[in-house]
Image 1 (cartoon, rainbow, N blue to C red):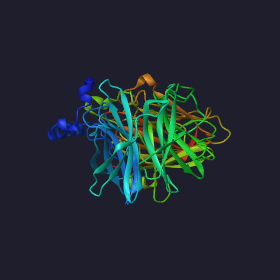
Image 2 (image 1 turned 90 degrees about the horizontal axis):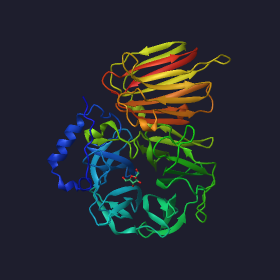
Image 3 (image 1 turned 60 degrees about the vertical axis):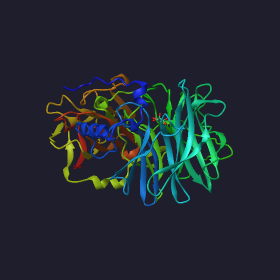
Image 4 (image 1 turned 135 degrees about the vertical axis):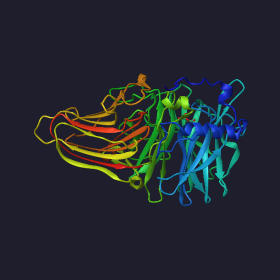
Length: 501
Ligand code: FRU
């Protein structure tokens, strides 16, 4: 029997310092969390407490550095720290421990999100220091810090940008820094005084003194009440602005999560205009749990993305176990037909152990694949619908129990060209208020390719080499590890599965 009653956290408890707890307390908490049946095998997750946004993602000195927003003590958005990990291959991550603590007057109520950049041969970060006054009024500070040789950080204070500029509320956060022709630039999520979301841009010669250039004009003057986690970069000579707007209403199959993450693509972006002309905002992921993306450039010129596989203000089944959330797998971005394409980074093939399934041929009924191994594998499914025939939908069930009562269902409907995921009967139900299905329409459905990464408590689906993705948390229980593929009419298919454990 699961204890699903959540502890009520008082404000005082949420803002207690880590130093107010004994080491023993955290060790005991970590031991308890390690017992959870929902711990991931190959995703970045917190040892205790709550993880949210990826931060400071940078390749520096032969290694990837990645940090995440972390509240150590439980599954609530309390006092935020940055937790640090490094990797040489984007596959195996080494835990480096807590890197930035909310220990100054300028970040006393949280070291909020920010980014990394290299300056003078040293890794630097810029983040939002969150302060609450005695009256609980919010003061956002943008702070630069430098990583020293021993891995500790020196914060440059007072903040590079203190408070909010005229015309904007106290919701100003998440600086993303880059360098271009010897000048540093940053984009920062903001809310105008009229409570609409936008992005501010600053520049600096030394990354210490910053000058406000103005708003990035993304041609969306009234699109939600706050934009978080902006990111601006070039791919194939085009400029991509990626951000997480809050306050967008559902529209057809789109925008069903509590908050969104998406992008616009512009042919050019001039520093004297800060204007992006584009064909509209596009949602980046079609799944249930995807937010607050951050990208970094690899030494070989790839643009790599990771995101929080969770959302604010949504309750998850592990909350009662005092931990929550993980990051998505790292993905390579590219552009195709006016869309951002996401593919799992090629390095991830290193996770493949034994190939457990390799099947192909014609199928016109249901085929069940027994699995007793953990939900920790990669699956590739190619389906072709023969020309000039009437086609019925195809379903692929994952995390299935012996009776096909419990399962995560993926439906390919060649008539409507829609792909639908359904988690209503998968493991422990949660977040049902936001709906239990998500749907993506693809360009054509003569043939479909799915590449799927299943971990203990997540499913990431890449459709047609990254034309679309579905990223979701799931909480299947013991024995819910089987698969079924069912065709209502004849299909030509191939299915391959690699165990990761
Ligand atoms: C996004 C966010 C950011 C903020 C951080 C605080 O999830 O709200 O805007 O910096 O989380 O943890």
